[in-house]
Image (cartoon, rainbow, N blue to C red; front, side, top):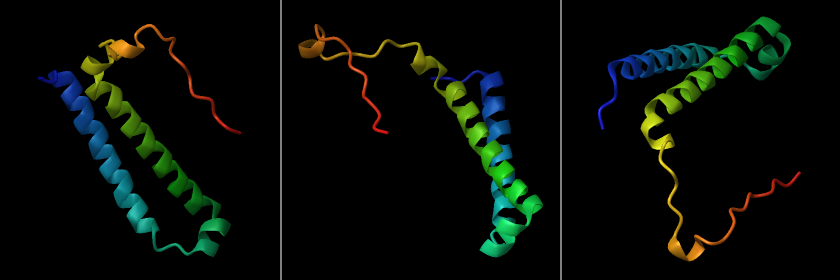
Length: 91
């Protein structure tokens, strides 16, 4: 499967962003727990870097799997006549 240039560029861009976020987060590892909890600015930086890195990873996923998402899932023949069941979350 060949990835279109536009999607490849997007993946590379998002991966570079994740790398930058990880670099910033690794610099913040020196913060002790007390400083992290009491210094709102440092805590905001750490939380924002985690949040945006996670969002970048999520953005990469649909780009890379766009060809897969359009495929109808295969159901084994022995279950073809059974209704699909959703799992229930426990609270």
